[in-house]
Image 1 (tube, one colour):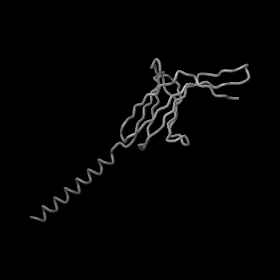
Image 2 (tube, rainbow, N blue to C red):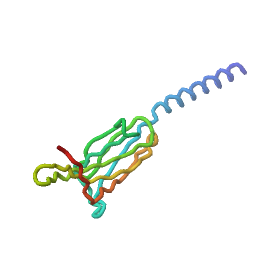
Image 3 (spheres, one colour):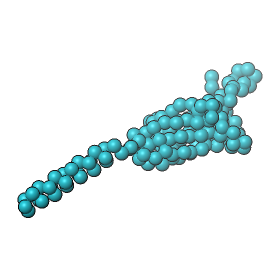
Image 4 (spheres, one colour):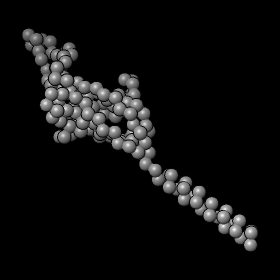
Length: 135
């Protein structure tokens, strides 16, 4: 009788560990990101903003453009802390029709990703237009 109880207890423990290990394999470990880019004054979403997500400037982990609602979404497979940079091209200026200056608005943020969570972040684009010489 004691042997039967011992065998049943062992089988129950093995079954319980099996179910636990299967359940833990189904855990969602992806990290979801939703970046919304808005104007810093009107807070209106901006379509077509280039968004770059990286750990340091040497390696880009994700990049793309915001949709009609000013949203850029992506998924990462591991948690980390990322830098987010947004840049919106506003056109070109020329001085005496010889020098071209690339004009843009920008914004930055930092996000911390966690397993199975969605991080929502809003970037405010500066109203000041930046100029960069292009030839």
